[in-house]
Image (cartoon, rainbow over all chains, first blue to last red; front, side, top):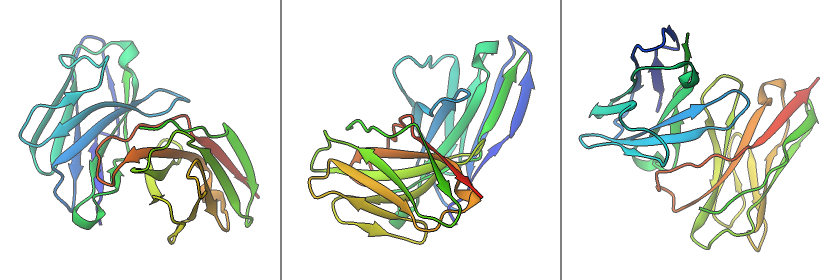
Length: 117
Length: 111
């Protein structure tokens, strides 16, 4: 149980376009989801915390107008990279706080590799 | 949240125990020690967590020193599939949301 999926797993887009990445909790409800970014050979960097039904909380230095987060339901959060540039190329990973008795865990999705050409 | 220090990399022979250390000398009394790992090009996976007592589950054991300034994650019989980056994270309470990842330890298990 407690599976998190992401779609797409890989995406290539042209500079200046927008890309949407979906994060779904498949078998549990997630009131809180998180978005991370990871550059090659680096650690995960928390970008924002997404709460169902309210605005996302962004970490310092993350542009909220560029990385739009929508958590419209208890099982879906989306990250839209707007006006993508090559420097936005990265591995984007979402996670969700575990359900009920497993709320001490975060369950991570498999990640989405974004390449901006 | 307290900062952690881990060795950059470690090697371990398959079938042997892998002992991964973590220093967290500024840990507060209400902060837990968590371990996650990330296999290449995948999302991280929860391993184990503890407050002050040693913990064991089906994946690993966690040994926390009495002063709580350091801990060791033990994989009792490492396999090639345990090759990954292991992250030691310290955070307040058990359901505080943020996970702040450090640089982790890259464990290479060899045949």
